[in-house]
Image (cartoon, rainbow, N blue to C red; front, side):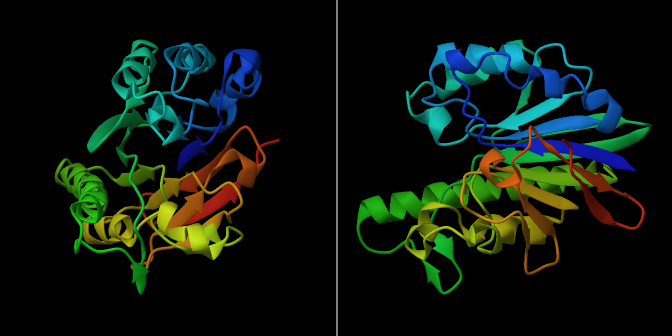
Length: 251
């Protein structure tokens, strides 16, 4: 049984230093790893990134993260990534990492992702160059996620998790205004997950959304944005043998 702790949209800044550390220090009692689904900072500054780094540095479980749109706002994502990596965080963008957990190989593939909408109500690579660039960027993110998940399968990982910031399905956006769905995620991410296969998909971004969803291929999707789960993190139990999943609420 693999215990995956996850949270996104923690939006830390200098005035929230130490806010989550007490909860994170309990992770060894209930989880095997911590996944951070983007929007770790408020404005993507290096100062805010250092706050996040201090919050997770030296934890007794491995930490894997993707960046979110807020983490790009100051246009210094490479520096934000460097600060987090110096603290031991596996920061992914079109990449995967393999962790040894209780004798099992757990693979996490990650990308920020991007928008574009969902089947029947989505943008396309047609018309103005800016529209083509928008969708092509989303497609590149999805292609990187698919390739990373396939790489994990080739490496024989018994458990694979897809970690994104933007949502792969509309299910977990319920509660958000339908007009902004195209800016909250893309079906291309779900296509990548279903094509390559995964045991669980985690994302954030949709603060007013819903926790539970599923891809058309049957992969469980969970929106772990902190305003949705209202916890420091949630824990998901994955059984690599029969793919059973359940949710443990963490006070």
